[in-house]
Length: 84
Image (cartoon, rainbow, N blue to C red; front, side):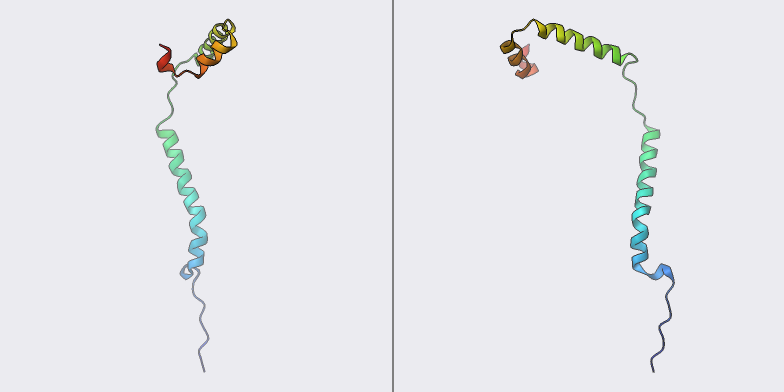
C-alpha cells in the first residue's frame, strides 16, 4: 500500500509566496516613495507666486484686449523664437 502524503508547511507552497509578494511589493514601494518625498522636498520658488501669477494674467489680458482678433490669433500661434 502507498503511504499517505504528509502535509507540507505553509512556506513550502509557491502560491503562498506569490500571494504575499504583491502586498509586500506595494509596502516596499510606499516606503521608497515616502523616503524620496521626505529626503528631497520641492523648493518654494517664490513666496508670492500667486500674486505674480495674477499680475501676469492681468497684463496679458490688457495686451490682448487691444489686439484685433486675427492679429491675436496669429500672435498666439507664432512660436516665441519668431516673435522677437
